[in-house]
Every structure is written in structure tokens, then in C-alpha cells.
Length: 137
Image (cartoon, rainbow, N blue to C red; front, side, top):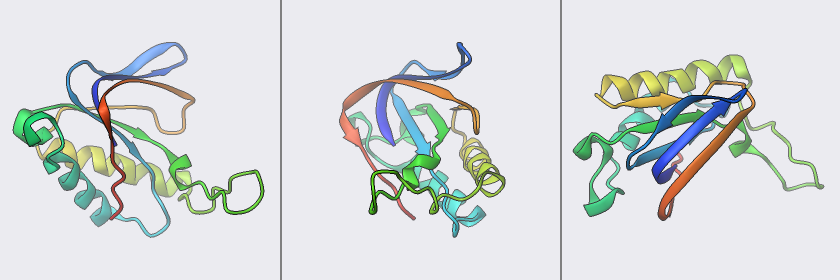
């Protein structure tokens, strides 16, 4: 998760999701033991985490979130020079869980933009300070 002042996702030259005000760019990686409860907990954590200016949260400010699926977060580089993706859940498992995070956030009242699962996405961001946080549940 990166605190941003603006961020966008482009697929095939078309912007499919963007935020243009302070908020969060959330890269969601799914592993084999994640489930709908994990998605619910993650959404609640993202919505309430007080990391925006003035120790405010997205829920305090109504700040937007751009959620992008990112299986490469589970890369294992322990052996050799080529990463292994064995820790990442396969697409048919991961896609509904990324969608569940988005649904849970929207259910909490969040404004959420998204990338496109499995697409070759170009992600652009203007970071708001050096604030990048890993959330593991």
C-alpha cells in the first residue's frame, strides 16, 4: 500500500482506474491460505488505517483507494536468479478474493477504483512522502 496524491492504471493505452486526490494505492497479493475473512479484515484495515495527513484514515477523510491485483508480491527469490510464484494463489482463487476486498471496501462506504485482474497494467503514481506499508493478515 502506498500513500499517494494521484495514481492511475492503464491497460492497452486506456486509463481504466485513477484517483487524483490524496488516498491509497493498494497492491493486493493473494496467497493459498487467504479467504473471504482475510478480504474482510484487509478492507477494514485499509479503510481505518490512520496514515494520511494529520493521522487521518480514508474513512475519516472519504479518501479514495485504487486497488490493483499484484501476484508478484509473493515472489520467492531465495534460490537462483529467477523468482518463483508458488506462494501466489492461482487466478481462479485470487480473482474473487481481490474482488471481495473491493466489495468490502465499497460496503464500508469507500470510493474505490480498480485495475483489471490478469491484464498487463501500467501503474503510475505520485507518492505522498516515502510512505509504503506492507499489511499481512
